[in-house]
Image 1: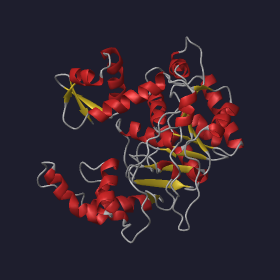
Image 2 (image 1 turned 30 degrees about the horizontal axis):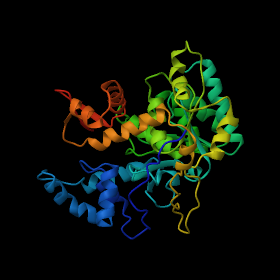
Image 3 (image 1 turned 90 degrees about the vertical axis):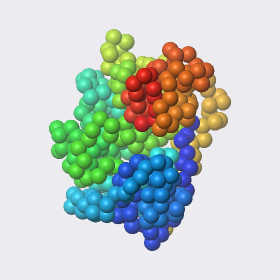
Length: 391
């Protein structure tokens, strides 16, 4: 099942003499500057140095006095730490940057990489699931990763214990990408440190966080959006009804990726999320062949060629309209649409939840769970008095 693609509104810029990694890092690490603001500033001002110069004025216009951009020393220290760890800094739209991420409106402006940066150019699928996975779940994850690898498909996951680790292990000989929530040099959990070293040697480690960053709760939803966007499909092997894996599945749908799930026993809570996804229209997975079939029919961004200077060509936006016309709208797609509508109506200023429900014209029984999902995803924040705002 696919959703509507989240096409980027910022252009893919050609390499210029303004590609100063210190300036990029200073802009990105400045207070109140996230990926979306970074891309908007770059589009408006043409380069990171020019955006940095304009940043204090933009802050004053927003009511923030005495604004100071990230000091140059902080950016220099991040560069030094990354290079000391042997990592490579990938700039958005430049050589080595994963092509599949280019169409995201919140694409990471920079990524730190350890390993083979050419792996995301190949066909890729993400495998995610429960940390406290069952023996059957682990066996399924290994079988799927091995089968996909034998067909030339790279496997991406998040290096968590359980399903993630099993998928990485099985895909090591054929290609695997691990996206970390903390610094690219800080494997988490620590029990997977040896696995991370082997992935660095034979695959690819990626992170948008500065080297040395210890992961915090807010980093994981951001990490998950990269995992889901890297490939053409996301396969959920085991997941509880409320889990990070389901957040990843919803994010994948928002990004126009295919969502697939492995069914489980109705009495096993670890399978309840997967069963819900299948009920709501996700493809049922019995083996690697089902995933391969889905990859052959999905219209998500395919691995792209690179330009003469090594930068990725922008892939076309996923064309999902034709398939949406032939397949009925299901619960997961409707949920993604509701999430998008809620986010479009919220801003930094708090809004009463009751007013939001009235504006949406939806029942509270439908909006309340969606707000909880977005809160767990770190995209909105609740305040006292029944108020909500963008995070």
